Length: 200
Image (cartoon, rainbow, N blue to C red; front, side, top):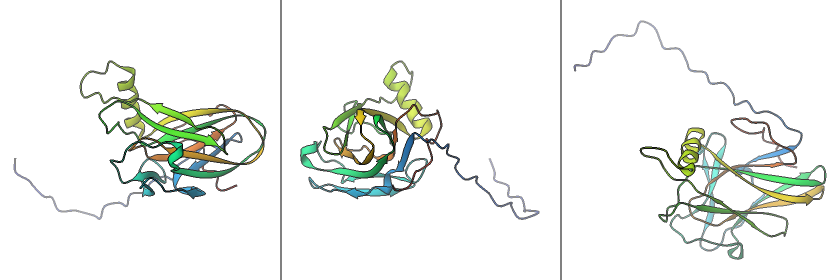
């Protein structure tokens, strides 16, 4: 079909976007991934901020891609200093960019620890659903793509109040971190998660 261009009768209206709205939670500390306290590069990998990747500030990824899996012994963590207001169990929620296993499998791993405690290795399994969605991993992939985020979490029992260091450990390739939320109580269901808490 032919294209027909119509003359404009008046200038277009400027687009105005609403600012992101975050709920507040007294029981949660929310930190955007680029607001790390320290990053430790190693195993021929470097942490890089990728601005605007994800629904909020951006994400961090260990680059270059295509490197083999690492463990905590390889020493490639991101570190976040936090002040915990009261003693108790803590959940660390990781907001990840939805990605797939680039090695051809169906799992990706990332590690979490508090202070010098043991590393909990979290495994996420997502499978794309190009046609019919029949598996839980396919439904999880569809949901992660819709939300532009995949949330997984680790639980740490009986964490004392005061200053702590939450460490996020690179394990598998291609697992960018958008945000982390440290919570001592169940979080309200929200799209973007709690408001960023700033530095302690």
